[in-house]
Length: 291
Ligand code: NAD
Image 1 (cartoon, helix red, strand yellow):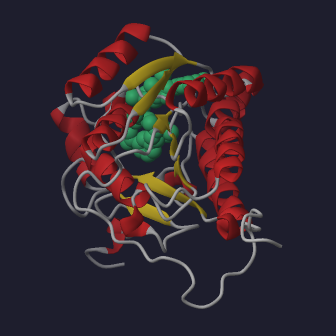
Image 2 (cartoon, protein in one colour):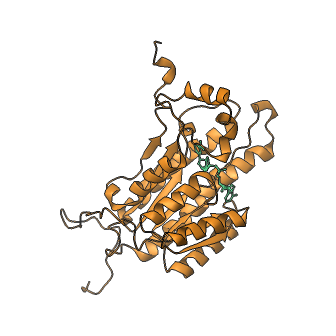
Image 3 (cartoon, protein in one colour):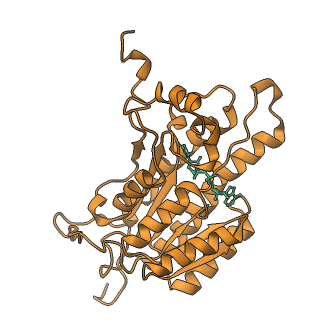
């Protein structure tokens, strides 16, 4: 092999042969275009803005409400970054592929993909319809498969660009505490997030040699439209707090901060991990006073 021949990206490195990260404090994501699904609302919107504040240009994916998506794009432009809003239903293969093709054409490549889009279709188990089951699995799990597959294809194609990151790409899957906590009345949702956990880990194992990092964020109760009924009245909020040792609801920005760190070279040795951002919801709060 001559010096000019491309190196096998999956070859094991000699000890000390690879650069270690020297993350800049700000803007740590400059030059790293990011695609965020479901980015016109809630957590996705906060993550898109957080990544932009950290220097990334951002693709705002949406499925409904283009005006909200345009508003997020304009907010990002006001931060001095570039942004485009692209419509795609993440559960549809042709739409996901068209969105990634358009995103890569627009920004040249992608370095960060946040697979965030998700929904709930709640029902007691014996009343749950196949349509409710399929809709949730289609968006929350198949959508993650379709988006992360396109991300891996682009990251493998490009490889590491040392000028912007020591990794070839970063994938963040938006999971939930319900990848761990069973949830009566929401079996489709909990099953989808449990699926995301092992999809994420299996993918992380497979693509680590290519220096592609794959991690999840598992939010607890975050103040977004998906769970308005859990926090919008004083009674509901008080009820919710019995599940949250840290005694405050999470804000979308709590998730954005975690996403920026996980997407940055500051987290370069982190892959296959789920970062719980939940105010202690997974600490069995019922045992705090005995058990
Ligand atoms: P949200 O309803 O504000 O946002 C969900 C986003 O996903 C919206 O933009 C919606 O349009 C989009 N979406 C839905 N179906 C889509 C599809 N087929 N294609 C593309 N986009 C689609 O709710 P959120 O709380 O911001 O949820 C974001 C993610 O966080 C979800 O995956 C959710 O499961 C997860 N999550 C939220 C909480 C919470 O407390 N809010 C807790 C744990 C996990």
